[in-house]
Length: 186
Length: 213
Image (cartoon, rainbow over all chains, first blue to last red; front, side):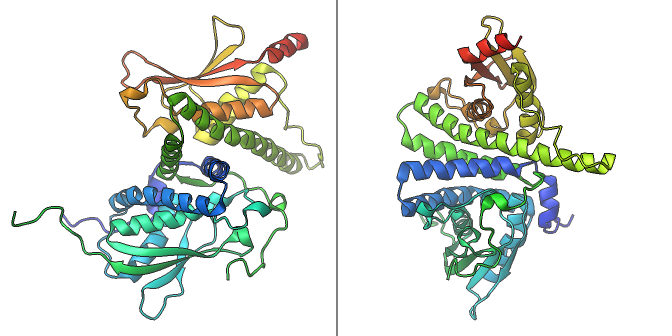
């Protein structure tokens, strides 16, 4: 029997269990507020959010691969497309698009119109350096690292800072070949 | 450059239109986020009581905002319903009642708040038999605890402290100060224990309730 083909983001999102986005939004807000109280420095909070996202990403990618049935991506272009179209849709329920490819195909932008993390959020003047959604950059970095791609993810545009959409730049640093944890000849 | 374009910027987040609240995210996204919340707090504390308190504080913030959101949203809906159905301009919203009685707020938490946050009403709402000021909301399996197992050395720790915090936030913001805790209650025939949210109202709430008759 031929294996089932890759499923679309919408189909998977419809089949997984879902919760109200507001619970998600408010919980994330509580996390950011706790971090701001504990760490006080906006840069520290950004780093911590990224680290949390990384921890989520390394486990999230397993679920993503299991539920979405995608085959091995041929190149980074396909990886970015799949993560944006299927990945974001299946976890956050929002579609993302991939734009701004550079000449070598190693750097692109993922654009999010809608973001459930930032409903009801406004950045106060004291936190202007905060990347509120930094957890997303950590998630992408962690997930891609588990599939052997070392990447660097930065924010290009952020709605909370006055832009109209969220734009993440994902840059492939290198492909790390899979290493076996044991040696063959020993 | 980030923040350079200011095309669609509402001057105030309060001026943005209020969403209908129907948007959803996957359960696993929430579960991952919640696990990170717990893990981060574990690094910040030395003992279990402190961990529960921090989770409760996080939940308190969620609860307070949830109450405001639900009250605002209900008001909007009622104006629209009245206009459409009766073709008469009801500028005053008649549906948005502020709960002033104990049973009213408890049933609001048990039904409305639970339905919005967790997708279903809570399993049961009971009055404590030993003390006048105690009420219990029980749930067979709290949404937040679904993917969590507590190691033996953590004793009676319950991540439902987050939900207890949410309930405390709602009650406090509605004018019913209370102490709210989450407990595991083992049930025969079930592998996982039931979770009970114990609500102990403050003196002033009971006195006010008695005065209202």
